[in-house]
Image (tube, rainbow, N blue to C red; front, side, top):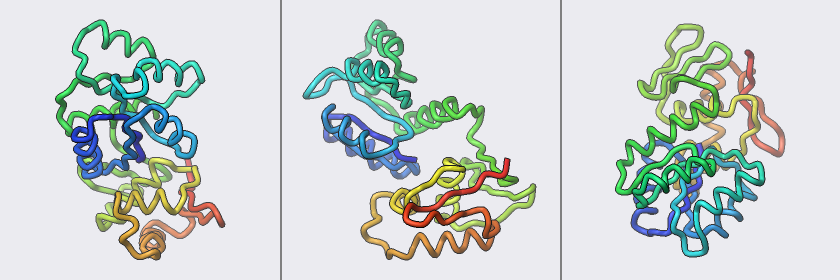
Length: 221
């Protein structure tokens, strides 16, 4: 899933980008509010991680701007501001969670997953669609109760499909789900190969090719 990180500290930003990528998040990292606005115009993000003290403005003001415009993207504030009043203000302005620096990358990833589960109306990490049940924590997958074996890349690809079941996903987004930030280094047919493998294991009708746009995992529930 794709995350927007708004953080002007280069060391923290790079650590968060790499660390979250290792935990299967796709991260676009920007250091200024103006860049975040531009990125949000051309991308659909599952969540945003936002620092408050930024070179071109205050993060809380930007958060309020988003909420006043009706943008409901889940936002986790990550900041060195420890005061209770600041945390309360951030939550009242529309933040979904608040994490103070320094933070654990494992905790940040867990909070991201929790925020996304709440927004999707799920109580656990389990992903289910049309008889398919996936547990990302144990990396197990079953169809109608029967376990199926997936390679690591097949697992990542299916997880990306299940997280956006019923929605069109572009080839670029799916390639990023497979390979993280190294998509420019892989063969262009890698996605086609793994989609072919998934269709053989799940049934060819589950993954629909949407000509000129990408692919869609069909919902059956």
